[in-house]
Length: 184
Image (cartoon, rainbow, N blue to C red; front, side):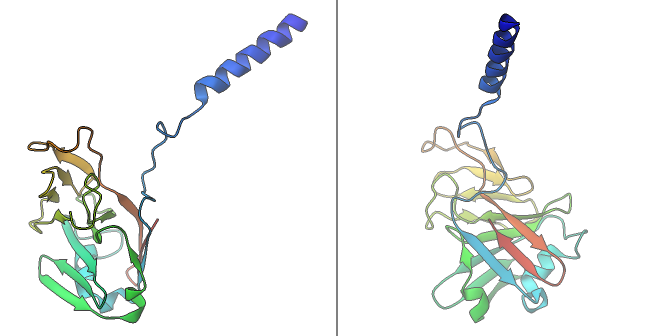
């Protein structure tokens, strides 16, 4: 009886050790590295965002917009150009490290990423978004390119700065057709 209890205890201990996690082993889909919390309501007041997001559940595949905040305005840039807003409500929001990239991937899923390169991780090293429908963005500083359709690294050719680059910093997004909320 005693050896059976000891064996069960050791077996349970071994299972616990095998199932334990370290911080390095656990990865989250959504980043909490930089605080993000922005809310647009009604979304119809922000036409560039409404255009890239399309109808809820259908989206506007391959379309993205960038959001950058300065001390006096929010600039939303999409394939149709740049529009500036000075709305006090959206000015209070938190836009991550370098701003945001918001859009719809080719599976009509909504995505939100930090506009700053996740490897350079400084506001001045923002990603270049070509608005050509490919969803490929590049950091001009480290030369790493990323795919907005899934947040992964597309190419590290030319990168000599970051030996183990990481994927885009992704944020949660809720879009109803009436309002948009990006947060972590």
